[in-house]
Amino acid sequence: MIKNEILEVGGRRWLIKEAASKEAALDAIASARCSGSVGQKDMIDRTRCGGTIETIADVVQINSDGTERHPYTEAY
Image (tube, rainbow, N blue to C red; front, side, top):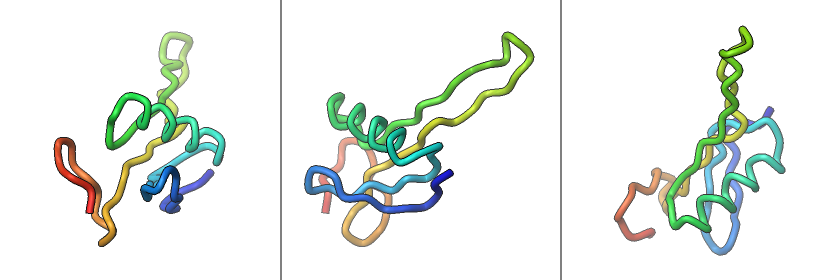
């Protein structure tokens, strides 16, 4: 389990809020980049079979000062 780790991908910094693995975090970052989003949260819902909702990866792009980037704003 990875929490609160920063990665640089494609010239941008990404905060991994939570991820099951580095590969899962990189997959979520790739998905966010392809869709033009500033973040991505991948989850598995196993409530139908008596389980819980599990977070696979939760990532967000961060600015140079460490703050989370918000939608429709320029990165700095």
